Amino acid sequence: MYLCRNIRDMTIKGEATVVKHTGSHYLLSRLPQWDLFPAVLRGKIRLKGSSATNPVAVGDIVDFEAEVTESDGGMSSLVSLENPAVITAVHPRRNYIIRKSTNLSRQSHIIAANLDRAFIIATIDYPEIKLPFLDRILVTCEVYNIPVTIVLNKVDLYRESHREMLEAFHEIYEGAGYPVMEVSALTGEGVDALRDACKGHVSLFSGVSGVGKSSLIKALDPTLDPRVGEISDVHLQGKHTTTFYEMYALSSLGFIVDTPGLRGFGLVDLKKEEIALYFPEMLKASEGCRFAPCTHTHEPGCAVKEAVEAGEISYERYSSYLGMLDEEGKYR
Ligand code: GDP
Ligand code: ZN
Image (cartoon, rainbow, N blue to C red):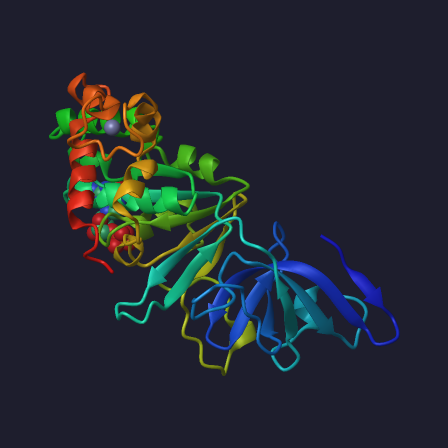
């Protein structure tokens, strides 16, 4: 974090993270500080080769400049909506997730960038989990290079009634290399551990509606209410404030990006022979396949099929893979 000051024209330059995007304006903060201040884009910032409709997304690290008239006080007191900071450059992204437009225009919207981890919130029951759907999300996160933790919420409801399924779930997903946490937003079980896992990171929270994602975010930090949108809009009052995605600061020192639903980013364009690269346990086993590339279906000497037969790779994961092979091409 740096601030250089040119006393003559009172220009402050610095580096900050985009925490919210509301149409024409952005809110920036110099993480890990939470010193929100508004900013606008100068001219056209275009990222090379990007077809995204938004050139700057939540989580982006940007360079900014601000013209100020007073030399003291924090950025938020120096920069007002009438005199917002100007985003002059976007730093290269470590990773990002995109939502594809439903039409065939090949346009996409960047949901968030520079994520340290994705927490995929799910429930074994209430609502019932769909493993092929979860696997598709996991593949997407692998493609985008975002480490995933699976968070099973509402364990108070199904730990007893679905004990075997719960155990099988751990076996399948921990076996594939994904940490699985059990939590209950209702009883508070596991919430401290989740809070610890979020500490010091920028994390994506996602899950299909009804799994208790909002309740969980509230349990992590009671001052947050994702439904209401807890970031103060004081800087943005009087303007059109359609919020797309935003980052929240946990009082326990962590930053989370809430996403309304998973469906939008469950789709990635992958060639048939690429899909298995994003099932980590299959990628590992495929080193032993006789043929390369190997689709792990009909080829003789396929180490992945052998691992499935030996129970080292779960049949559920393998069948999700076969399902994705089958459907390949349908999304183009
Ligand atoms: P979201 O759509 O994922 O944001 O889900 P909500 O937070 O709105 O929760 C959906 C429903 O599940 C609500 O009725 C919550 O009260 C309930 N719920 C959330 N978490 C838990 C939990 O850990 N245990 C139980 N029993 N119910 C929960
Ligand atoms: Zn193979």
